[in-house]
Image (cartoon, rainbow, N blue to C red; front, top):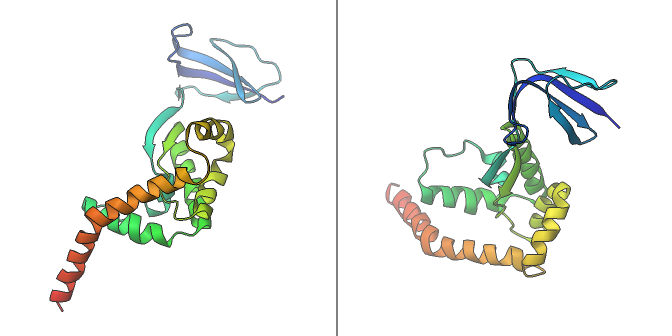
Amino acid sequence: MARTLIRNATVISLDPKIGDLTRGDILIEGSKIAAIGPGLKADGAEVIDAINKIAVPGFIDTHRHTWEALLRAAGPDWSLGQYFTGVRVVMGGLYTPEDNYMANLLGAYEALDAGMTTLYDWSHNNNSPAHADGAKYFWIALWPFYQRTQQRWPPGRHNVLLPALFTAAVALVFILPLFLRGIAQSLKGR
C-alpha cells in the first residue's frame, strides 16, 4: 500500500478533536487519511514538504455547470436572456454526446483545480439519452452516490425528461420572445 506523509503543513482540520495545527503532518495510506498530528513517523513513506503551505479539507461547490466548461468566458456581458439563448439553446444544442463527456471532464478538473472535492452538478444539457450517458460515464467514479440518488428519482428517462420539459417551457415563455425580438430588430437594421 502506498504511503504519503505531508510534513510541516499549517493544517486547518475543521475537526474539533484534531484542531488546527501551525505545523502538522498528514499521513495518507492508500487513498485514506490514516493520521493527522505533529511529528508523525512513517518509515518508507513518500514525504512531501509542506512548509509554508496550508492543508484544508476539500471545498464543496453546491452549484456548478460542468458541461459549460467549454464555454467559459463566452458572453460575459450578456443579459440573462442572451445567456439562455446563446448558451442553452444555441451552443448547448450543438454539443454532441462526446462534447458533453469532454466538457464534464474538463469541468471536473476545473473544480479540482479550484480546491473542490465535492460538487452538485447542474447537468442540464441532456439533449438526448446519449448526451445524458456522455455526462454520466464521466461521473462513473461517483457511481455509489449516483445509484443512491437514482433510487429516489423515478426510474428510466424521467430524470432526463422532466428537466428537458422544464427547459423547453422556460424557452417558450421567456427565451423565444427575446430571440424573435432580436431577429426582428436585426432585420429592421438591414
